[in-house]
Length: 478
Image 1 (spheres, rainbow, N blue to C red):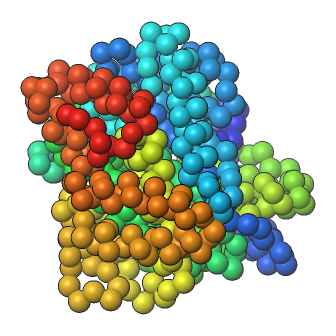
Image 2: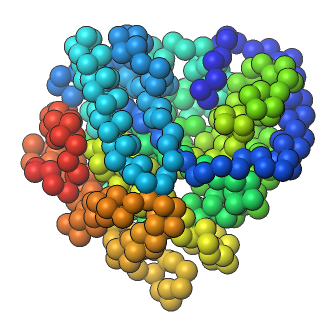
């Protein structure tokens, strides 16, 4: 979805041509994956940080075009809503001290955005869902002016005549209808990328599917939306329903356009083929000339663009960079609370994935991984979880503590320095032991500030002040 889209309207003929391109490029993908040495190279990691722009009193600030221009930083890109921005961090080897470098860059880029937002009388904050959002913030004018977002919105409406219906039930209930996909802009994430070889892709991807449940349970930072207390990670349900293209004509398709999936994968070819077969295009821009890209590998521009409009919580990525390679994009973690929290969550997830990739996770029922994920999103530390080798379900907080040594072993195997492993996983350990996730802190802080709608905005301002210190959430005062 980082590709530049050159217009916001497409004809039916262009949709037909685009589908034909997708079929051709599936064959090209198979060919390049079979090349000896394709995708070889050291394991690297990267991340994308989505954030909100806010006013001094903690409310959304719809000025992303102006802030991006003032920042003048190539790492920044516009997001769907005019109160969102995204930062793409520099990829780096996972061996050594990657997490220290990642924290440093997160703080640097947040400072850049903060300074640019100040030119518009605002600030920046990394938080899963901005609690001070109101229904009035989700108008057509809130959509970023980029052609790609206008085209994508029209593409989704082409597939779905019905309004998008959102029904969330947690501590409270929320039900609403909207005509477009603007509700997606309520969600911001911290997305972690892990490079892997074609041979290892299926094992690493399946390991990430199993790992994300307990990691998400200890990382909750989106407990409310539109004044209602909902899930620990309300983002998960909100994004799935706000971008569900299955209307009455598509109810036979098992998975929505945003989903966890429904089975273990056998490889990246299968995943791209399923994406082409099961999901209709929404953004049919044709740019691929058929000429090889950098390193002599095919661009597969249309296939990559289409894959970018199907939002699996763990998503396969084909990239032409560095001679061509594959990545697993782990999309389920929330933005925030602090730079150290986000990086600690990454270390837990990457280490656990690395260890599980050595095991036959496919022997564990996929339904167990699926339940773990949605229970984690709903109940956080209190979720009941199953796990390979356990005879019964146990609470997520207990499971997470038991899995920290497993994550440590995985990080060690990937060459991460011992002190780097220690400080990141200690943050997770303290957060779980003290039962202080971002979601819990937000609820408690809001209650202390009065518990009304105005308290949400006051809480956001306090949250931002504490996040700027870089200290982990378990140390924050209320």
